Every structure is written in C-alpha cells, then in structure tokens.
Image (cartoon, rainbow, N blue to C red; front, top):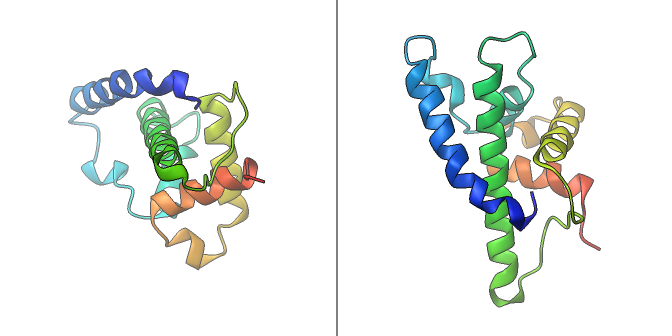
Length: 132
C-alpha cells in the first residue's frame, strides 16, 4: 500500500477489466458495485471456494489501493492531515485483512455498514493504522 505500489494500480485495473470481460457470462454486473461499506466487505471477504474469489479480491485490492492513493494525494496537498498512517512495508494483503477485520467487527452497526465504501475503507484502514 505504500507509494511503491502505485504503478501497480494501472496494471490491476487492466487485470480486473480483463477478468470481468473474460467472465462476462458468469459474472453478474451487480456483484462488483461498491455503494456501501457492506458491499465492500462482501467483496473483500469472498470465501476461498467461491468461483469469483480471484476477481473479487483483485477488485477489493484495487479499490483499497485507490483509497490509499487518494488519501496520500490529499494528505500531501496543502499539508492536510492524514487519516491513515501505515508503516513502511505494509502489503496490500495486510490492507485487505485490516479492512475485513474492522468490517467484520462492525457488521451490526448499520450506520457504518450503510455508509459509503470509501468511508468504510478509510475507517477500517485508519483503525489499524491511526495517525498520532
């Protein structure tokens, strides 16, 4: 999730697009719509035995990478306060695990789970790596 991974975002978007178009007959277009935190949680926690697991995890990873990229850009502009202060070397898998763990523990909180996927991702990642 550090900036070293930013060039991967473009490659991932191409990969996700090819996965989606390659499985067009098998994928319901509603599967990867991330309107809410709950939507993001469902995609990011797709079980290992689900045939759409690879596409779902790639989509989740791409979304979270976009959130971190956005947060870095906003944090760098005009010395705005950062919301997520992850240490050097944090991996994308650790980011997914952090979000899924946070969301799993907040499933009963409808305010959080019905909030936007962006806000949920920020909350989940900031709960693991808060800024001091």
